[in-house]
Length: 139
Picture 1 (cartoon, rainbow, N blue to C red):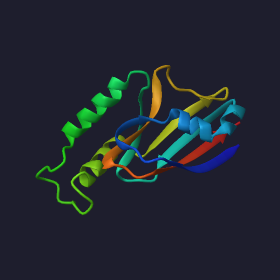
Picture 2 (picture 1 turned 60 degrees about the vertical axis):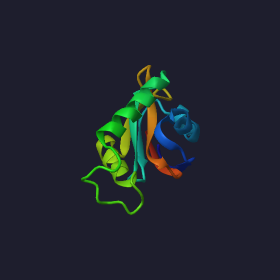
Picture 3 (picture 1 turned 30 degrees about the vertical axis):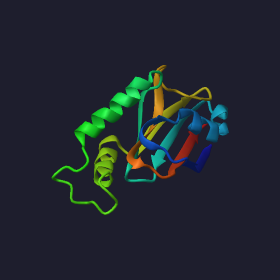
């Protein structure tokens, strides 16, 4: 089986947002697979995807604080300012974290660790809706 679906996520403010349930809800076919892979791709250059802790919200706040310190707005090196002071830092953060994830599927479920969740990493102060391409393959 091969399925590809493009979904739109609602706009979110800057931060790390759990979207695991959003992804699973969009893929009812997931339950039919015994063995497979889910590939996720975000179609944006100022947001990213990652896997991390899904239980304690402090992890999401700490990640946001770390990345804002690592790649601050209004840095002297930043010359791409056409879309505001958060735009170029958002591009750098997205490059550091990446635009895609590959997750195994086992017995109809995403085979994530017990404390892992899928994050949308919104790097703009006021992100727009974000588009993801979900490609599910397996048998």
